[in-house]
Amino acid sequence: MPQDPLSEKLRLKLVERVRGVFNDVEGGEQPVPVSDEALFEKDSPIRRVHADIVGMMVGGIRGLLLQMLHPHALQGVLDHSNFRADMHGRLRRTARFIAVTTFGHRDDAMAAIERVNRIHAKVGGTLPDDTPYEATNPRTLAWVHVAEATSFLAGYLRHVRPDMPGSEQDEYYRQFAVIARALGADPVPHDRREAETLFRELRGELQTSPAAREVAQLVLTQKPEGSPPAVQAMLGAEAVALLPPFARSMLGLERPGLASIPARAATWGMGRTLRWAFRQG
View 1 (cartoon, helix red, strand yellow):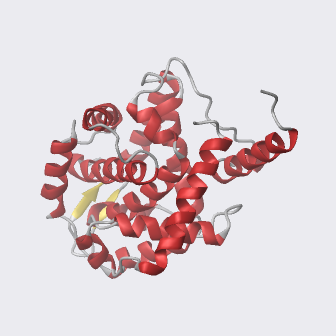
View 2 (cartoon, helix red, strand yellow):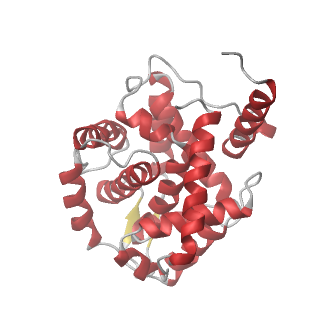
């Protein structure tokens, strides 16, 4: 069936705009090329989950909010990051790391992991109570990982495939564990049960603080270049809705009420549009 020229033009324009949000186009950065020699097979659970833009954006915001409740992870960001001036840049770099390790050639994936490990080796300091912290702490990395993994999967289940079989969800955790172990996280969950158990265990190490609440507000009010503010507000509301009640309470956030239903519908519609634009079915 012939492709409608206007439809194709709109599709390509949308793809270009989205890629501009996630890649430093002005700096010459190009999207990560999908490789047949990646760490994970084509159409495997991790590649399907990490390919969905809206699910990953919602999950990414949720994951970052959870990560900031761990005092060691939070202090590392406060001491060694310019997130206040460049929140979009931080999120863009995280998105690129996920893209490279999921879809890129395995050599590029391992090189990206090694770069992060070198950066983490230089990150350390003390908490306000003089407790030392290091970014290489396996348990801190375990929380960062389980917060990300549960959040990315939650975004995918909510916006793309709520009927994803449990066996595929377990396989997602097993695949993502490959990256987490290479980054030094320990323990690392390999299925849903282990993820739930570890999440409950590490919850005891979380703390609320004015700094965590400040970062949460910065994450939720950021205005990425090229992304309409209304879109960011929708994604943020969805991320907050997916947070466990205890996390919303610790961050001083309220669960979106009935007023969020139109925004939720718009988010679902945006997801369908982007899947069409990127020919994801």
